[in-house]
Length: 361
Ligand code: ADP
Ligand code: DP6
Ligand code: CO
Image (cartoon, rainbow, N blue to C red; front, side):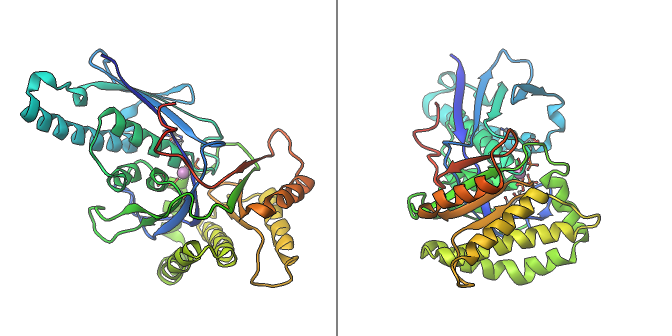
């Protein structure tokens, strides 16, 4: 019997950014973060995993290209080890209940893993989040693990920090935790995807090129050299976590927008405060910030906003806005940045269908 599962996983775009690890092995962050999981209609990872006693080694293909030296891919190995361990425990429990001959020892089989993203990989659009969330979720399905989504988020976190948030739809909090073993560093849902249906996300692809500095490398250099990051961790994020949670729960777009833009700005300021500095934003990204700022000025009030920009570790913009304003924003963005091969805007509702009927497509 073939043991194979396929599932898809969504990206999430943070409004309070995760940037910095206190433990690089377990992937424990220096601050908590909040994100919104986006619909899979536009951006998603899709992963198929097959287990077989005939496979002589575990292999991984990413976007059609085989990744070699998997033993050196510590994060992948950590996710595999954690899920296999749970599967083994489950098999032992089943053996006791129904007899060893009736239990398939899938935990001992090698795996063939095939994953593809339908959007630019490693370009600041959270491919590591959808990729590792999808990997760990597919493993949990393959191994039929009786495990909660929050527990699964702790395993996905060890693949890529931001991946722990993609296991939930809607509005998600990654609690940094305080324990050294990471057992309390987990994702929790603040509100489900249909909590704020008027909210939408517009994704502006400025460049689909692979970033020069990976998130992993970039954030560790920031931790080592930036004094601004220490200020952010201690004096800024804790208060923002509370205000952002309230803004989401009360669907207060003005507050949501203000914190989102300020937090994106501060994250990129920390990148600039890294030595040597890291530049993720480019001239087009900065022009988008100017255009959205001008657009917000049309409300005539400094505390009233119609759109909020945010940028991850790359030049691509995500604009959160109420749906009623999206056509106007698309008009403005396409006027200043006419769509071209490398400048495409995707429109996406910020909700997801994961992990439910969209799995196993
Ligand atoms: P991004 O901004 O896209 O998240 P990162 O630098 O954080 O960029 O991570 C990119 C890395 O994530 C890739 O080089 C790859 O190792 C991993 N990754 C991306 N997509 C997948 C996937 N579908 N399955 C497994 N790993 C993935
Ligand atoms: C700017 O989760 O990609 O997107 O844990 O090293 O894999 P690793 O980093 P990653 O970092 C994401 C950084 C960010 C902000 C965020 O998503 O919160
Ligand atoms: Co990433």
